[in-house]
Image 1 (cartoon, rainbow, N blue to C red):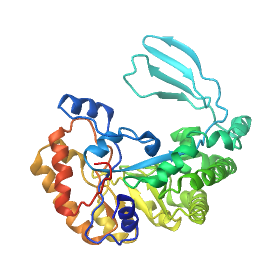
Image 2: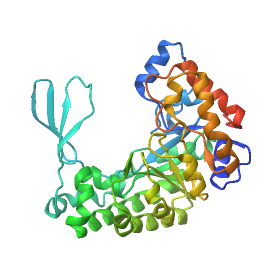
Image 3: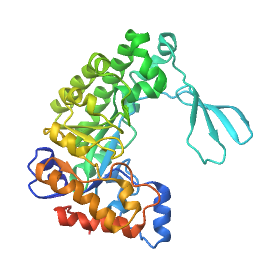
Length: 373
């Protein structure tokens, strides 16, 4: 089977003893360190991989990659970005969605949002025309006439349509605290934002799906952390579940069979609702937050990606072997499992350890096929 065929077989629990190895990504600092250790670059094909970064790493280690293609979900046209102030090594700007953002001028930290541009219904209505319509601009992130055939014809990587889920989108436009509070404070605004977002995703998504014929829909959420979800099951059922049901029904009507959610931490409290909403796969199952083995037992219909501790690779080969033995025999026997670390491959992992990890997966049935070798 090709990697794409093995992916679909795994999603249907029909992969037998064959194991697909997939990773979420690599921190850039790690790749800089590996180059110093002598790692050489391989082949990359941006027309095939779209948004995916460092495809040469995936090819070099024979790892399947999720090649994401997104649709423009935010402001079109964008607001004009401008600098508000700059002093003491810090710059405050008003960004393309009207939020005030502080960054260090040396670039050594992530941007920090001081104030979000949307706080209430009046703010939203003032910019709503930029969050709906403009479909041509939202589907022009890539030249679909080029990347469409390339994505359809390659077999080394799986192709996904990427959208932000309900919580992720609310967080983008309102901030984390407001995304958690707005269903209580203004349920009408919550419904308006999510319905507008859903319609944009459907209109732009339909065009992108026709061009790419993706293997799955990737829904980024990050709505759960170590202690559980940032939205209660009751609020999820009222506000988020209708979004999921309509979206997953829509993409399946368009020929996309699978919906995969990306959320860190412990999502178990919301799993029954996600499954009810049409989600059939989830990642990354962070080891410090959730027991993937228990999830596999409690939710036998859910395809699991990840759950292998990245920290084991920071130690030695014995620790790697022990971690794989903890996870792989049971999950391989269960089926519906795709091998991956429990997040992006972080800085601090030696090249030899990562190679050992990739090679050791062969003992558990790793069956990746690459046509580019």
